[in-house]
Image (cartoon, rainbow, N blue to C red):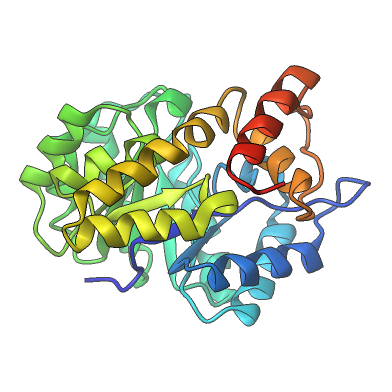
Length: 291
């Protein structure tokens, strides 16, 4: 079983005023997240704006964050090309990362047999542990439970980030995979109900803002204090929901900036949050005592 822990942040990539990667801010944010209880970090995932980063920016980020923290660093390497994904893996490995996050190929819309062949080839290209990533709302492609079951038999395919928003599918996956295969929620609002089905933890966006509270909720549930876990989940519901009112990571970068954490803007084709979104986030942050 991989030792990635239960609370993982899919970290934003901070930019400066010119929309260049702000490596100092990235290191500062990574250290902050670890100090607040994160047990691993995903770098250059969806939240990290991987599609608009250069290969050099990605490898420099891996090196900078890996040097700054003492938790596992997981590199988002997935693309809609198996060959390109494997090339990303090679570069990430050379940068010293501890694991890999590989999303289902987007736009191509492969069937289940094709998905199995893709991930089998990806896993065969590395000795690092691989976390599969299913997010059909982004990719147009759903990794089904029976395919996850087959992939979980491959030695270094160690985990799944499931962001399909379907508790029935979540339960079916848990039922099928070995006990040492870790299933993480990729949706903050699904974390508590998913844990009730056997989900191990979260690859989170909201943890940028509320890591201590999320850690407390997870710890409460694991220790059997379901009432406390429920209370925390309800308290965090608005921020869980509102960080996705427009495309991620637009809201979370805005929220970080409001709380004094340097996150900067977003690169096109995303654009910064409008006034309506900012007002919603401001109210959420005030309710949580973050501003």
